[in-house]
Amino acid sequence: MSSRRALITGITGQDGLYLSELLLSKGYQVHGLIRGQNNPKRVLVEEISPEIVLHEGDLTDFASIARALKASDPDEVYNLGAVSFVAHSFRSALHTSNVTGQGALNVLEAIRLHDPDNRIRFYQASSSEMFGKVQETPQTETTRFYPRSPYAAAKAFAHHMTVNYREAYGMHASAGILFNHESPRRGPEFVTRKITQAVARISLGLQDEIRLGNLDAARDWGFAGDYVEAMWLMLQQDEPRDFVIATGELHTVRDVLEIAFAHVGINGWAAHVATDAEHLRPSEVDHLVGDSSEARAHLDWEATTSFETLIKGMVESEVTAH
Image (cartoon, rainbow, N blue to C red; front, side):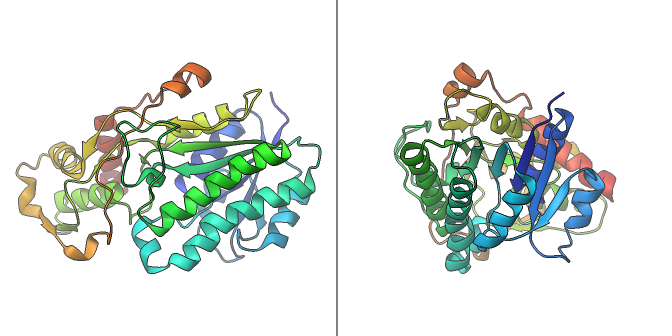
C-alpha cells in the first residue's frame, strides 16, 4: 500500500469526494483545503471519509495555501477548487476570476516556494468550457480555446499558468481538460442534477414542472467517478502533460429529459417542462464533445459508465433519497 500524501482543494465538491475515496483506497493520506470553520459541507466530507485531514483556507488567500502545504507536505496536489457554476460566473465575474483563475496561480506559486526540488506533482482541473465557441469538432488537446464565459476565461488563465510553471520551473504540472461529468453528488444548480432531482419529485407528486433554458444545448457527459481516476493517472506518469478526458459522445438536454422521465415511467415529458429565458446564458456554448484518444493511448483510460446508466442512476438516487 502507498504511504503517499495528497492535498486536494475543492474537496467538498463531487470530484473532491470521489477523488478522496479513490486515493484513500490506494493507501494515501488525504488532506483537504476547506473554506471556513462553519462550512456546512465539512460534515459531508467527514461522514464520507472521516480519515481526511482538513485544513482551513481559501484559494484567494495565499498564506492559507502555504500553511496547508507546510502542514500536509504532500507528494501530490490536486487543484479542484473553483467557482464552477457557469451561469453564476456572469453575475460574479470578478469573484469567479479571483477564485478560479488567480486561485490556481496562488497554488502553483505556493508549491514552487515550498518545494524548490520539484518533488510535488500538481494536477489542474481544466475544463471543456475553455473551448467555448468551438473551432473544431471533436475537441482535442490542440484545439484553440475560445472561452464564452467568465468561468471559462478564468479556467483558460489557470490552464496556461499550469503550462507556464511546467515549462518555466520544471514542475511536474499536468492539466486535465475534463468534459462535463456528473453524479448524484453534483450540485443541484447544474442541469443534469436539476433535471434528475425534479423528475424524481414529479414522479412522487411533490412538484409539477421543471423550468430550464436551452434544451438543445449538447454536451459530452460522463460519470465523475470515472474521471477522477484519470486525474490520478496523470500524476503517475514520468512526464507531465495535458489530456482531454471525455466520452466522445454528444447528447442534448432533451436526451437527459427523455431518459430521466422514462426511467420513472412518465411519457410525454414536454408537459412537465417549461423553457425560461432567465436560465439562458448571455453567450451560449452549443456543442462540446471531446476526443480522449491521447488518454486511452498514454493513460490506458476510458470512460466505463454509459450516458444512460449515468442518468438513470442519478434519478434512482433522488427517488431513494425521498
